[in-house]
Amino acid sequence: MSVTELKNETAAQAVGASEIEMKLEVVVIPVSDVDHAKRFYSDLGWRLDIDFIDGDDYRVIQFTPPGSGCSVIFGRNVTAAIPGSVQGLHLIVSDIEAARADLIRRGVAVSEPFHDTGGIFHHANGKRVASGPNPRRKSYASFASFSDPDGNGWVFQEVTARLTGYLETGETRFTPEITELVRHAQASKHR
Image (cartoon, rainbow, N blue to C red):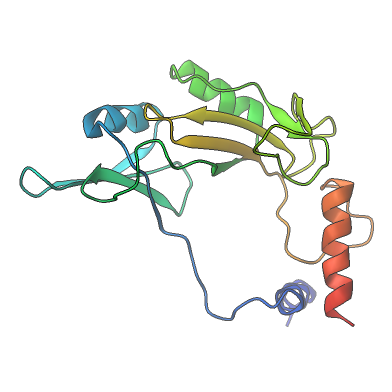
């Protein structure tokens, strides 16, 4: 076993990870106008996977964002949720400014970038949220948001390095707050 494999295995064990692989495959989003939503998600540049109609009362549309292993589904009679009620769907991007510029070019209203001054995750209520990307452009620390025509809320989150549950000494790609939390979790698992 390589050193990297051993560290990854140790990190997974340290956080009590399940040995059963689980992958998020589909998120169902409620929409009021299926064709309007289809145009919106198509205009985002997402891949249309399915547009299935069964009579007048059932339709399933599936789109997949570029590079994603998870898709979204919407349509008629696929969810009882209220259109616009899904919030906080996160799309991970490597460059928040480029992702934002791409959507603006496509005619989508996107917020200005923002970051949480606490360095962990943005607050839904707007507390401790500051304008602009994280000043040090740390991974997981910069955000921008947009909504679909029904108000379902999406968030871009800039991730340039992935957390694995194990951090090397001297790691600087994450905010000090995230680094401290991961190190604390590592230490508590070894007690």
